[in-house]
Length: 269
Image 1 (cartoon, one colour):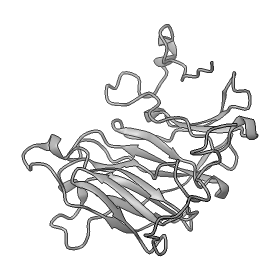
Image 2 (cartoon, rainbow, N blue to C red; image 1 turned 135 degrees about the vertical axis):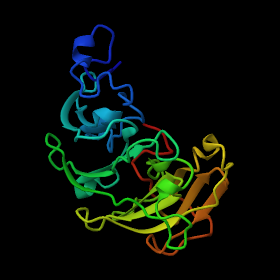
Image 3 (cartoon, rainbow, N blue to C red; image 1 turned 90 degrees about the vertical axis):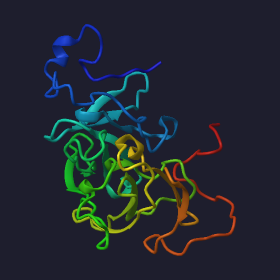
Image 4 (cartoon, rainbow, N blue to C red; image 1 turned 120 degrees about the vertical axis):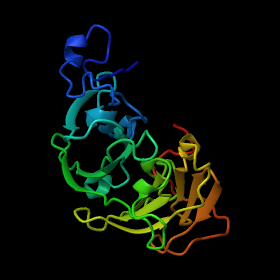
């Protein structure tokens, strides 16, 4: 069995933990959140895996020897304390040489610093570097608030589209569930200058005087890349939406001919 951890996380490694910039700040999240993402199985020649470790940043692992994984690259820029600065890594743009990482805000009503979503050049796995940050979403012009900081609930990203999905992910498009800001669309045609050309913000649930009732607004999204449909899970229901950024939706049933990653939904030989 394989196991890996950041030095300082195990009992007896207190001296290593004391070296962390976040050590003792009582606000930072210092552990792995979502699973390690790997675009290709070791059995098929895959070598690199990517993982987000909260305030510890993004790690790139060489797993060619699955019994002895090792870190080859690390991206951990300076940041404000609090939140979950590195929550999930989206590896669907690896063919273009970059990944996208997102945060997760933990407190409602902007009770902590906004943490950016990074577009990271990983073409050299040993030296990942920032290309850009995704723009901070703004409310619609007719909204009764000027920024999402003025709206109840958590403001910030939670999840990109699920990696396990039918069809090939769009090379230039991504979307994030953004809690109080609904679903936000991003254009990555130029990864150095990403834009935020669209959004979908469903009605908000909860009671105005109960901040906890707004905590998860829009939580998850699932994209059927082949049918160009986006499923949105929120406190007010499950929505199916489309956007011209993906193209015309296919509303009729269709057989899945390709999956986002090899071997999905069919097991391993």
